[in-house]
Length: 510
Image (cartoon, rainbow, N blue to C red; front, side):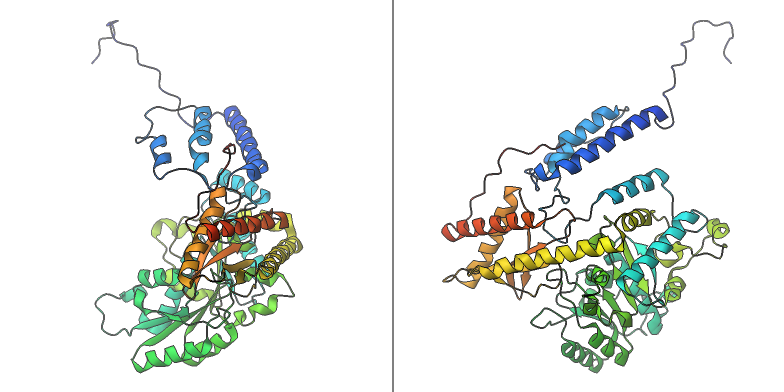
């Protein structure tokens, strides 16, 4: 025991301040970050879209070890500008025309800030009644906008890749496999289950088959017609062949808006095949579901109401930023029966009689994703969303018309939505050489930093692909990208090994 009379002891050092930032500091830093975000958005068009950095360059500048002592926020934000921003691909740039474009916007940004401040877990009604009920309302709004009938009910996941896993898991259980209780390992009573999709469908199918223990080789790719839509006759033939081998046709994935060409499979015909064989019908309308907002185009989605499950991604074309995917089930109780598992520590939270979204998937902790969607849908309204989708379809049709006027370019797929696939085909060149030319054009355009395209393969040939999804993209941006394509094509024609274009001085990064 210390001697109370001992005056030689070293005084205890002052403990570091614990807890969060003081409220006055937090308020000042939030204002600073709001200004940063606003400056970024208003200056984004001045920036080069793709970064000029080498692999590992940013990582090396960030430091190999975590900081031992606290650092001032001013220094952290300075490093955001100095180190991080030079390595950002600016998806929100209006001339970013790769993939399905960026759905970033002001109302959504405000919603994300609010959701981050609240930081609730929307797993049960009791853990956050508002989060649960707002999610239910937003899902109902999307259902109505897309045009799905009332029996369908939804649940929010992060991506369509996760949604298809859940849908096929229910299909597997409905087939009588009792996998929830008995699993798949060591069983000799299970047939080989086959799932069919077009050769243009998303690669998430194979990943779902791997995860569910159905096997990647049992994802059957069905040939497509001239418009890159699943050939229903070929589907029937593939199923008949599998039945002769004793295999079970478990499900078919029809796509409304394929990744490469935005083609729409003949869902009604596919649904008839599914009914004949008792197969589950899942419709991947992650992109194309947005067409339901346009009365003049809703007919393109005919048959979607016949599905057992449908996925729509508002983060693809309903202007809700990543990530937000809505899976709709004709019989949502089947999803709940498969995944509901309530541990003792949550039993007090799950007796409210209200929906508990944790019961509808593998995830327990769930972000308040619906808040940003709610703010977007209210800020733009159904008519505003439809007008933006309609304008982006018009821009795609405008670009397609420009392509058709150029004798050395050719459209490679029908333009059904806001995606255009085309190819540089100069006379007197071999097909194999043209592949390299088109790849070089994409690289050259992207190297300018003034537009961003991607490429894909159709029928084994490389084609250029433009996807329009940013609500700030105008005809001027599309025209500029088209000019860059033609300039790069001229360079390719003269010099097949395209030189890297001058990027000009680096645009500011903050």
